[in-house]
Image (cartoon, rainbow, N blue to C red; front, side, top):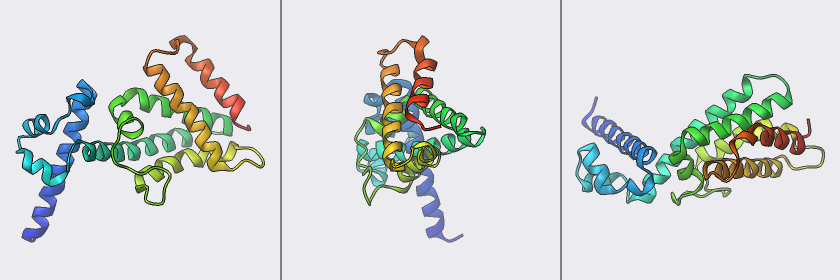
Length: 192
């Protein structure tokens, strides 16, 4: 291995460590607790080393979001592939989305609530974000209904899921109605 290859591997390893540490800290204490100073202390590198990888917290949030989008896409596809029938796939996808949001609140915030400097729904949208949307579209496009653009239907269904995730997490919805809300969403929006 050349010196250059070793340096690149070490740099990639440090970058993964920074992202993992930021994510862990955010999940434990919230994004306000994630500072470059605290990250530098936790990973035992100087702040200039951290800044050689990321220009600041915004880019770190973006990196966590991209990692989270990859994980979300995998979870959505896995859930949809484990069931038969359109209704079951849509319900499984919806459950997987809400479970991801509940299990990974800091990642979910990085994806959809915080400014990570990432472009959404544009030509320069990063591939992991496009893939997460594609994971929704693969299942939801099947149930959009005649004359309804599959991507628009997916955006609408996704918006409803995001609303449920956000309102549930904020304690604005009664927990005992969660299954009925999800059933109603699937039944009323999807053409099964």
